Length: 305
Image (cartoon, rainbow, N blue to C red):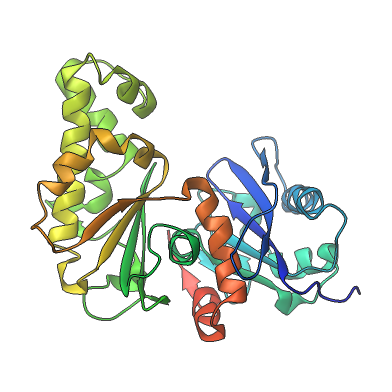
């Protein structure tokens, strides 16, 4: 087995339809070239591991023996390295990815680590993005659903005053349903369809916003809900900064004014992600190289979706 490569770690972001990989360097958490691939055609756990290892080899450019950290969606037993997902990547259910990847990456099993994707996103923004220098930070990742993570003085927290169970807000009760009913891609699509009778994707609605009042209103309604959640459900956490990431954050100009309209001046600084899709990769490096206690908290336990 090769000696561990110091100052470098392989980082992976397992997304909804593709996997990205890069080498992250210690110190400034700078990433090497990011490589990615869709896994639509993957049908087995061996195929998925093969894909990860191919991307890892490409990102590492022949420098093997590095440890690896993977940002993964939930539910996932982060400590054991075992997926508990049934509705997505079902072929990984119950598979020990830690053992499988360690054997292929030529490192020890304890040098393959896992953390929740939203937690990785926040750690990335803390280490090298929009949450640098803030004592109390929250990230909301806005996409198909809503992800969340919380940190105090750079350390992830999953409980305590103002922190929802497990640090997850998607299923918190809100306006007769749950948060994800109002803050998600489907919420924007539904609002637009109700007002126009037309079915469009979020991307199409965003592109139409310059000349389409219904499109602007769909995003404004979305933004109001983001602001209401920050000012009500998360008020007891007293965040100093709230970072908005995920695909919908790329259209922040369409909903941020409505979000800010729900916040009292000075209560929280609202920032759009600086790193966007690179945030989870950087966050994996922060978890690996940062405060060992924080890294342990990032990979300990079972994370939901």
